[in-house]
Image (cartoon, rainbow, N blue to C red; front, side, top):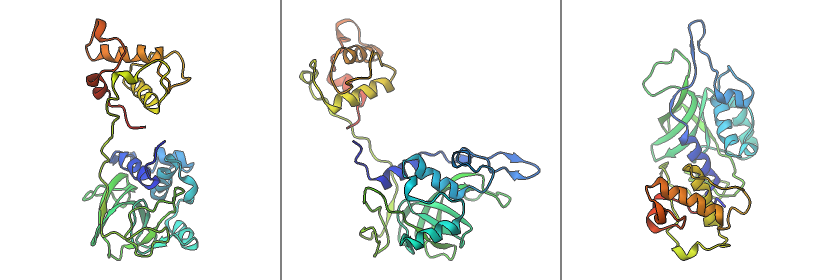
Amino acid sequence: MDTTPQWRQLTDHLMDVPEKIYERWEDSVGWDNRTTWGRQFGEDGVSWCVIFNWCMYNETGLAGIVPKVDNVDVFSAWAKKRNQWSDYPSIASWVNFGDGAHTEIIIGFDTDTVYTKGGNSIKTGAADNGQGNGVWRHAHPRRSSYVTGYFAPSFPDSQCPPTADPHDPRGGTASASWRWTPSDPVYVPFPGADFFVLGRQSPIIAAMHTRLAAVGCDRYQSTANQDVWGAGDITSYAAWQRKLGYADSEADGVPGPISWERLQVPVP
């Protein structure tokens, strides 16, 4: 079971989106506003900064906690009505820029600066002919008049994101700063050869099953009982050992410390 806070899952997903131009240029109209997120939202070919925010939540199973709207003023009014509006940044909140002109999602803050990433925006320093064209990161002075306020959603797991709000209604403790950095992956240490006996049931085995499939060594005949060590695990692990260059008795399908370390089975 993934115990990562939902705000962190959302932010990690957002940061996985490559920064680049996503629209096409048409000489008659400029950037065309057509993106995969517009199609997902069901309203393509229009300004999509709010649409992008909603899609990030939708893609992480959190669409139910944000309004499906395409307008900054509308989501701001929605947030204020529900006591989810703040003058302070918090991670994964939606910033209202320019009193309804634009929005992005907060990925960091400190005493003087708010850090964002959003769609229908431009790369810092680039010219856009009055339009956004892609997904990019930015930094803005926190106390700039361009920063109108923040929509701070309440997450279903009741975990408050890092927040600068000293009175955050979600119960968080105010922090002076927080910046997104990648989480270091945590892998299952080698449990010992004696762990891998027929009938052994463990979420570690299910995680190994998923990992073997990811590296192209899926030799399973069934998807049932993925957490039970059996013949399919032996055959699949032997394929992994052969992929590493082992042969004959060294590719017997029983994990050893070196092959296990190289498989990098994530902690379930």
